[in-house]
Structures are given as C-alpha cells and as structure tokens.
Image (cartoon, protein in one colour):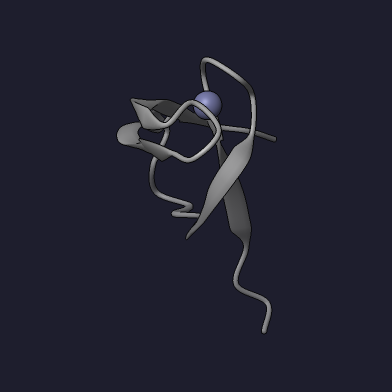
Length: 49
Ligand SMILES: [Zn+2]
C-alpha cells in the first residue's frame, strides 16, 4: 500500500509506540496523549518525521 504512515513518539522517553496514517490535508503537528509502556503511564506523543 502507498498509504503513508507516521510514527508517534513519546515526548518523555522518545519511544515510537504508535503509527497512524498520514493525512495530507493536516498541517498541524499531531500531539496525542497515549499510554507509553516504557514510562508506564500516559504521556504526550508527537509525530516524528
Ligand atoms: Zn515514554
């Protein structure tokens, strides 16, 4: 598939725990609060490039 995937990395430890499909119409940087198994808690995850 040619669907682009971007990784969401934990802002605390930097682990890339999630991937989401890239939305070409979206211009803002993704910030999602998700569970990080390395930090053992919910942290802000940001998209990486
Ligand atoms: Zn983490």
